Image 1: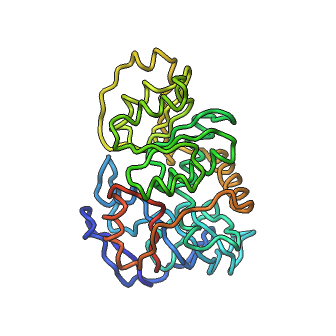
Image 2: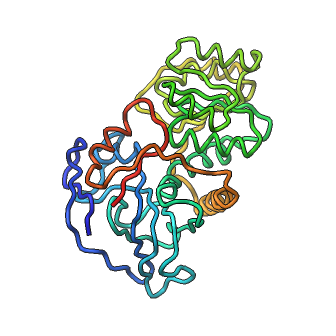
Length: 320
């Protein structure tokens, strides 16, 4: 099979397309034929050994994918060859034509959801649900601010929040991104390149502040986030690339909560809840990943450069 194989950590150029044997499932594993692969910023952090990541090389990258069950191990029950599925991680990595998975990494993909859309579910929608529902405990009628809302996590957050009945304010850095966010039914969209956009956010709440902030770039925004929170407001840190100095008095002034989150910390019962909610949203069509572009697997290095550039507009997909 064709697969991306990383033998040393470094820049995108270490992503090499190789011929590898198709893996054989152990009794508790499932072999999935991959039809589409999602690219995430975390894939680039791991590849570069950034932010404390230290993967064991050689390895095949990737967490997001969708495809068809090819074969199941002898002890696997309730999952059958030919079923359409999306993956929430894998044993062998998803940047490949085939991947081995455990049963808890396999989830039904409705017939109306394309494989490309299915490859945009796991990291984006699990992050959005985990941050908004499980960490922030968001409620209907609250006001939500989504920083960087045109990226895959931002779009997922918007869709979940709108279905919940929240009022959604959002930012994006390009005109194309802002138009995309508007199409996702954000109530108001600001340009986060505008130095005055925090004042605009506060004005949009009549000076009351926002109840929840989903923060994709805490190293840029956290100091200002604390100044636009409503009383007992919450900031959920979804993404961060550096340190930042804040004044704790800004948090004290409104009884703020700063909440971190990582997909690595999700407990099994929380994960079961998340995928049940996502599955229901996919079936009812209120959740629908937005695809930015599709690229062949051999262009994985280019995809890693693109996913880190400003101006995200949905999910980048690799096709094996």
